[in-house]
Length: 315
Ligand code: G3H
Ligand code: 13P
Ligand code: ZN
Image 1: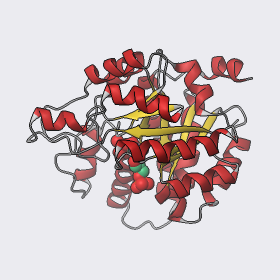
Image 2: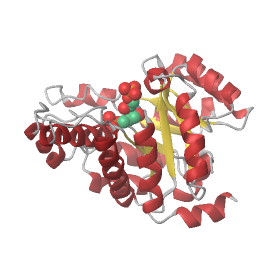
Image 3: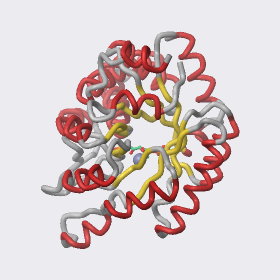
Image 4: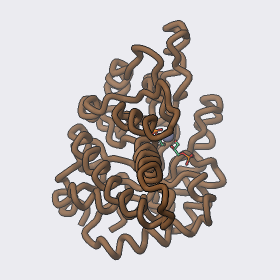
């Protein structure tokens, strides 16, 4: 059943975070649904602009609708990840997405407010909810002086002003994470003090953490042992998800870790079975490994086991 992220956040706020997982193909979609049913978790499916254009923008919609039928007990939101204004309007018009993210975080504060407000007005008119971003992820490097690094993190006072001016439903905040497999070069970590300050100014308002893959070192070692070259890859400690949830984070975005599962499965498969060429052989292993990975993440996020409670709340 497709619901809005707003419905999921109302159930989760202050207690746990919902996993937001990007999908690009059939095997990932199947593994995601299986993993969430195995762990009895509500979830968010994220579709990026790149995923929409990977084959055809309608392809993932068809896969999700089919999965909804195959797993009739599932509860999930369909969310556009990092949309620009035009893509947000396309998704709003499609009638399929229950939630869109407008990412105008690289613009000035005023321009970000202006663009976000336009998307919010159009989305709300159709019952679709909106996530926006304030602050800049990534680039918080070890060699950057503390003041400069902090300047890229979300400003708590601006966050309050932004939410009031745009009426956005949730806000992605920059608190030290970044996208991809190389998040930290040294001892950097999450800035919980920034989250705390935002929550103080925006109590009960859902916050979002992007760039939250944990880049498991065991996974990286297996990839490298099977011919990969991912030296120095490092991610977010998944044991910190629950603390973030207590501070108002209701959505945690994970994509890179799933790509690492895919890479490990396929590298090991072709190393171990050089004579094989049926794409379904590694595909079956991947779906099963991806489902296990999703169920594990849901445990760490605290949304495992929440499905029936959420069903009662969204009915
Ligand atoms: O934040 C970005 C997500 O990991 C999606 O990545 O734009 O390559 O699909 P993508
Ligand atoms: P990761 O690259 O850490 O998986 O982040 C994904 C993300 O934020 C998608 O929007
Ligand atoms: Zn992101």
